[in-house]
Length: 213
Image 1 (cartoon, rainbow, N blue to C red):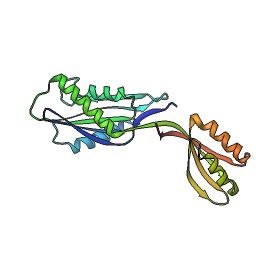
Image 2: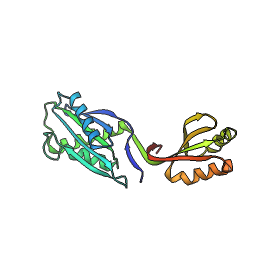
Image 3: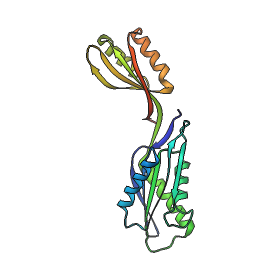
């Protein structure tokens, strides 16, 4: 599992070229089905648009690279809409990403070059609004912690690249300690050293999660 970059959130932005409005709308999308559901929602929102063009890169392989890439000019001249949208997504190294651009014609023809530049610019503005999430392979380690060790362990881990979650208080404390896989060995060694190996690991699950860039 390798880290990858994806949009942090769904967002919109708008540019105007020769009185034509280009509304870019970007979103995270982990699958082709998710991308198509997002695109259907955009089309409903912009029923009056002259064109709603799009591109997406989704469904990562083991190296974090997209296994599905699609684009559509949606009636614009071939290569003037879907291609610059996809190129903009690709140039930023984004995966699990879908961008639609709705064009409202302003009465002035832009020509092939003008359209290509406008769709690429609208996509870039939408992605700027979305921001970037660095999706890292993450281990969620469930720990069983004796009460006397809880405060000690929290203090020891406060300066480490990890985060606590799902804390439960029963006959002992159980908590999830999340860490990027690349930091996992270091984090677990610190847990063992701090507690003299008196904390038990009861389970470990793995998934991609967002971490600060």
